[in-house]
Image 1 (cartoon, rainbow over the protein chains, first blue to last red):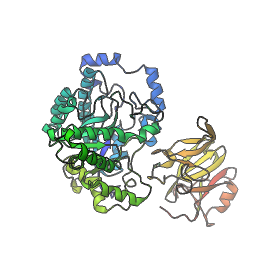
Image 2: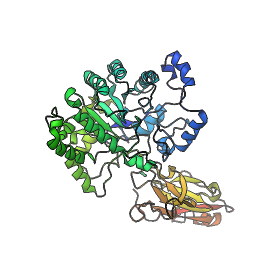
Image 3: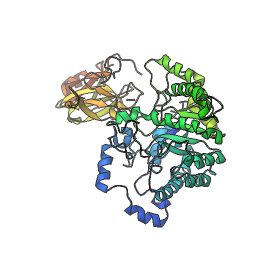
Image 4: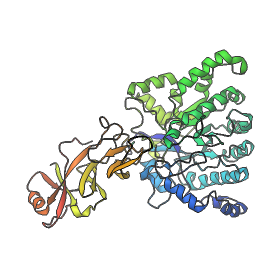
Length: 373
Length: 153
Ligand code: FES
């Protein structure tokens, strides 16, 4: 696919080759304990693996495919999808002419309740990311894994690793114990700002909350259709709590949450602000201004409209053409194909921005000269 | 040149399938209970390699809470986003009118028929690859696919 348009993939989920993959990056004392601390009895873990699980508590329904992955993404060596560097290189980077891919490892670390263990695992995960992925493959960039429920420790970890500019953002998941605007998370935002990196918020997590405000749904389909709910609550909280004013250089990337709902959220927030502004007097501009200035979002899972012209209307309503970032979600089952996901009649300039330029600008990625390929 | 010899029929056992490159088209051929069914190995949704998906049955329900697992092996589920296609008709489960994958007729011909039809007689090409001529013996039966006048794509 050397003739395909070069692109930047903003959401790739590399995985551990096996349960012990972080071991070498953990202190010996924890390595010993970790064996005793394996999350689940082996038999149960096997059942979950076989049912197709990469789940956290609160999503105990089987995924449509094992590890929620593309059926063709299992490497021949038998490891988990996107656990094998060479296979990932071939099936993703080479196949689609990916100039850079941002790795967002979903290792369940942010959701852990044992914050001591989460801290050790987060540090190990970041070192593993450098050693196994960023060093051997220059096209990869990494998100900093943080145990975000311990914001003070997370801020320290951001300071430790962000000096390596291959780490392009810190990563939280969309369901946290408290809304993200609350004080307990501020040290993370401060650290992002201090280090000049955006904060990524990826769909998922747990935080003790069901996927919907009405309780735990029965089916994975309901889960897949409800991802916008947590994102809407988090955007609203971050704006209302004044986080964007307190941290005026903080940039936020919404990953895997869709975006067709964003115009209506902006309309709703603006109208509410007009009436209820006295409650949040620090909000000196309509919320939509803050959304358009400070938020970015990834495309996958693409909003597939009934009629092609509706996509054009959506882009117009959003008025955020510089903020849309293409992502595949490789190796997951709802992968978006670079040559088929975007509507075919999309304006060429906009297509190029979405596929490449917007992410290059946001993450300050060095230009790749074709001659070096 | 629309007919291609794929392989000996006995090479594709019941329950098995194989992907052939037929004149530049990737086509999956399935042996469903002794019947041979063929579809294009390209999903009409986003172009996923359809024939790398799992082969399942048609799961239907007459009312909430009841499940009928019908026609085992006659449905292929795309390895990417799990759209389901009927191997007999190429139609998708959720929108049979508008979303479908090309399907092809597979004939089982005797070695004698195939040998008689081989070049120099026109109309039949040994395949799947020209370089990989299928050796034909009269005792065997062969799978022959007709890709008709479908444009390449
Ligand atoms: S590519 Fe087959 S279902 Fe999407």
